Image (tube, rainbow, N blue to C red; front, side):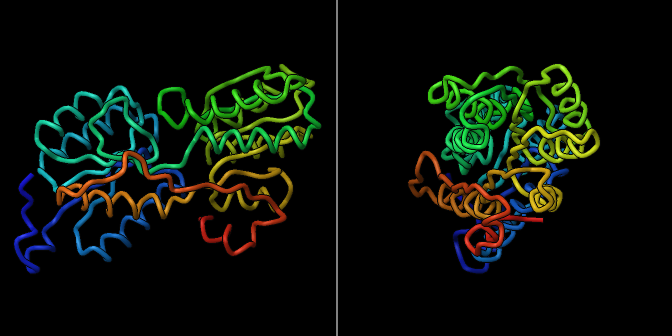
Length: 299
């Protein structure tokens, strides 16, 4: 595409890359924003960062994406709340020759030039290994997944489930329910442990699910092992007080940074990789203060 803003140094400030996030209610998304803002400074581009109040507001996110495309930006960063609902607007972006960099959640489309994200299946498989070790590779477990429409929701669920089925024949997955916000996850945890009194461990697949489940665990004084995903002050506090046994952390600042960096590369016509793996780590009380881990945790 012909990109206004690459004609001279004075014009370079005009390069515009909007990022449309999945939501704003979790600290994860604010950490992504911080990374994007740092990249905007480093590469001297203008960015905006917005998202719906919750990750369930698919229609609102589509309106934001449509409005961003109407401004004819140099490139666009997009984290899909619903990977199928975005397809028509992805096609529109291609018609307008606006490169799309997907982040966190992929889109069921070949339009994005690359995706900056954690390997959700591999990270959830690591969570499964940790859970298995804690329960002696034997017994009942369950999953509170944050949704069943985004690629992260599906991939974290499947990464955990498939690892358990492939490696741990004595572990039985007795329930999978969906609730990515704290109130819903709180209710799910309580009903889940009541319906399955022998359940030994529960995996919660995002920040909201983990904190909601942790709050419920405290309220009913449950001994069920809880393993989470993401970071944030609430989850870190629960790891330190023993409510949550451990969690997977992503590198959200790195995700935001790479979206802007590779959006700019794509806008210039440079070749970019199909996928940018931004990494993940297991953290618990024993390593939460490790400098390598602390660098990718967020409040």
